[in-house]
Length: 396
Image (cartoon, rainbow, N blue to C red; front, side):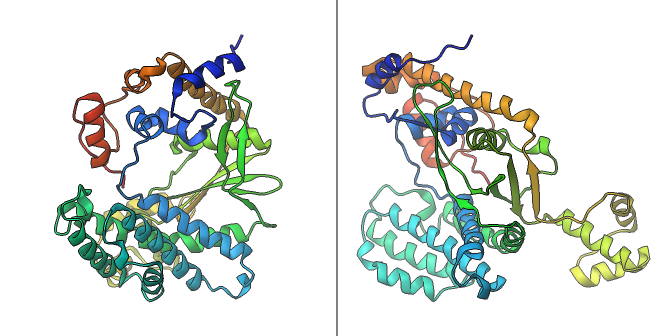
């Protein structure tokens, strides 16, 4: 028999938490707890927020904005794909600048809302890195004695990496937007976007919050943007599966996970060589034509190996988009993982003393010391809380 948390027990837990918000959990916090308890503790218990950038999240927001414009903008029929892509890039760049300005405590009077707007409207992706550098140069002079994250210190290695990561998102946005837009435009009807859900079905005594991506009458879609698209369902991350299961159970309808991004070099090569073969070229002719088109060579054994795979029945050309349907047979078990995650967090909180919550909870939140993505702010804070150093490793 499952033991539910009573309202009386929940009230006693709430009393223990002091300033920690326990009015609700969130499905994203469940994913964070399973993935990395160190950073979960920093975010949800210690209320620590890293100052380091989140290019992947900004990229996702930009691509979703293009999809929504193509479906709901009053002038959607006049929007060209080129316009949707350029507007998505502008959304991404605005997110980058907005985050950057929040890092500096002084000197923001040099970048009023009006000036930023003028800057953004006059700038494309080729000009953006230089504009970003000019912002950093001005604000760094006003904050040179402040404790700043390394990536906003001019001439530092982290600053160089930051600019490269910012620029790295452009080809992914440019590749993803057309495929995402065409995918959603092929679906009849207009979806609800970012529906707020409060789920009471986990017997936790408090609700679990979630926000859907795109929801239609008959099904829902969780859109993921990635530079590495899973090839099969087994490769989809547990986080993404559990999130889709949460939405599916709460909304009582099937759910899909759609990945969109860009092809890797191997996929591009396979597509091109297969096309040349289908155009009637021999292996030797493919070698010559491939080099003329790409500027790089390949070998006859490589061509043969690729064609051995791509000419078999059932092979499909690589596209930077992949749809997965959440199997009904797995939904209940995946959502049970969500429930147990919530129970685990709740038991940790209940076992902590009211006046020593931060100290007690840190003992429940020691996780896998390997395979963690940490930025330098997180690594420093972990050293303060737990007393040992962990290497930084940022997610690409």
